[in-house]
Structures are given as C-alpha cells and as structure tokens.
Length: 461
Ligand code: ARG
Image (cartoon, rainbow, N blue to C red; front, side, top):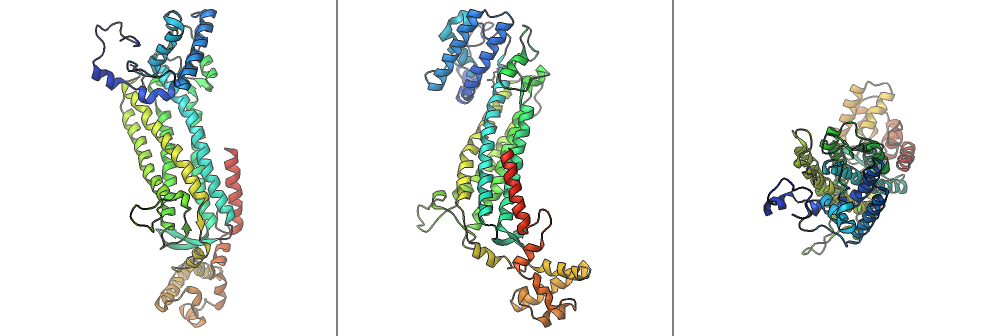
C-alpha cells in the first residue's frame, strides 16, 4: 500500500472491503485547501523548532503552494489508494518535492489533531456564508414590512381568529428568530475559534512545536488547553448543527404560513411564477414548492443534528474512528441551507400581498371582542365582568349573523348597561391596532420602531 500513512507494523495491506469502509476522500476532500494551509503553518513551526532547514522549508512551502493550485484546478485529486484527504495530500506533496523533504512534514502531528482543526476551519467559514444568507432573508422580510406599513391582517392563535395585527408586525415576527440564529452563529464562533493543532494523536506534541503560532497563523483566537479534549470533542460541530437545524425550523414556520396564505381559501398572497412550480397533469396548478422543500429540508437538518449527537454519545476519550462520521451530516446541513436560503429570499421578496382581502378578514371571527372587554375596563368595569359581557356580545352577533360593530344600541345595552354607543370607537380594526401601543405591540408607531431595530441589528451582524 504505497501512499498509506501507516503500514510499518503490518505484513499485508488492508482487505478491499476494509479499505472501502475506511475511505473518506469522497466527502473530506472539501477540507483539502484548509489542510494545505495548516500544513504550511506546521512547516513553519517545524522550522522554528529546528526540525526543518531553511532550504527545506522553502522547498516544502513551494511544493504546498503548487499542490494547492493543483487541488484548486482539479489537476490533483484523491486516488483509489488514498484513505483520506490527509493521506492524499501527503502523497501529493511527496510527488512534488520528493520523499526526503515531503516525508518531514508529518513530524509532531497526527490526523487526529489535523482533522479536528480543519473541520473547525471549514465550519467557521461555512457558518459565515450561512449567516449572510440568513441576513438576506431578514432583509427581504424587512423590505416587505417597510413596503406595507399600514396593511392589517387577522392575527391568529391556534390558527383561529384572535386579534387583528399589522402585516408588518407579523412579518417581523419571522425576522427576529432568524436574527437570533445569526447571533447564535456568531456565538458559536467564540468557542470554535480554538485550534486543536499541536495536540498530536491525543497527548500533545513532544517536539518543541508551538501550537499558539499555528493557531494564530490559521486565524484562531487561541490553541487548545487540553490535547485530549481537543482531539476527541465535537461539541463545536453539534452546536453548529443545532443552529443550522434551528434555522431550518424557523424557516419552516414561515414556509408553512406561505403555503396556507397562498391557498384560495386564505387568498392573502400570490406567489411569483419564478418561485412556484406547475403540475404535470393539472394545468391550473401553481404550487408552493419552495416552501414545501423548506419544510422538508428542515426535517433533514434535524436528522443531521440528531445523527451527529448519536455518533458522539458515549464515545470514550480520546479519538475514535466513529468521529469520521462527524463531517457528512454537518456538510449536508450547510449544503442544504446554501441551496435553500437564496430561494426562500427570492420567494419572500416577490410575495404579492392582497391587502384588501386581508383587511376584510381582519375583523372576521369577532377578533374585536377583546377590545370591547378592554374598553369596559377603562370605564371601570372589572375584567371578569367585562370578559363575560364581551362574550355575550359575540353570542348575540353570532346568532344574528352580523359583526360586533353591527350590534344595535339596544343590543349593547341589553348585554350590560356599561356598554354605551361610545364603545364603537374601538370596534374598528384600525382602532384596535392603534390601541396596542406598548413596546412590542402591533400599533403602527411601535412596528415602525421595531423595523428600525431589526434593520440596525441586521446591520451590526
Ligand atoms: N479521516 C479521519 C477522520 O475523519 C481522520 C483519520 C484518523 N485516523 C486514525 N486512524 N486515527 O476523523
């Protein structure tokens, strides 16, 4: 087994099925550019420690540069005999600079500290890309909110008519959790920015190499405090997988509403042609597939998280080969979101809102009943009594098949003597919305404030 990283103590090479099981180049190749950079940093600390001459350092760095270029162009790739990306790149280096110089690079490091470091590097970059994509969705929501400052809609709990709210308020209610997800990704980076390089297989390096120098060169904040922990722990990956799954869940909540809103029964929105699909048999169909794929992929993201946690569970210290299973679920979550985020952004940007329809439905289902009760409280009636009275108004209106605003003076007075005709001042959707003007409420001034706040936070991230 020519290019293998191990073999001295073996009389025969691995069985074919063993090699096939062991192989990871088909997914860990994405770490190759990071591996080369880390190798260059490692070469420099070997040189500083007196283990690599100046001339050999120059040869090695140049060989690694050429290797990186060949990886980027596709001229160099994994071969059948390569077990993983690390072995393949050592082979590539030796092909370029010879075994005498190339064979010196591996001193004082192990694939265990390498892979833990490279996975962190890859993930820190990936998470930045995902953050940008999530902020694009937030921006699309904020833009739609800003474009519809006065539009009203039925607010719901239990998917039943509850109280009227501003459309902008509802849209921003999807922006906030996404902003928190981006904050979570920033926070993830605080813990991910610790380099395992120099931990060796598990016990640390004996060759006088400087882990802090490598950490700094690879843009980590520090090197690991415990080499056993650094090579064995993957909580950083699980933390990222959680936030990625949470993003999926948050997007799926919005997607579900877009699906419902686009039905003729709701009729709140029309989806742009560019972000919908048709049916192969029913010519009239316009399907909300972006939203459905968002819902579907959120299940996949949750699966990636739980799969990774199951892999990590009950592994003894330190490195175990189980850990080779850590990367695919996380790579997949990133890949799925990188496909999803631009599509959901485009979908939200192009939603056409039928504000007249939403306004018509806003008072339906007696959504102003709470306003009657609260108006009575302002007249000095205990809320218990007011709640009963407002409920009685609903009963009368329902029996007569009219809205609360259509009750006659006599009907109102018949329910409770406190219910004078003046109550009609709150029996409009606009009046109800304007009255909820405490911080966080749906009143126009508050929602405008909120929109500024969302934009400011998004800008700062
Ligand atoms: N490819 C492995 C991984 O992804 C790293 C190799 C470690 N192998 C070993 N025998 N210690 O985790």
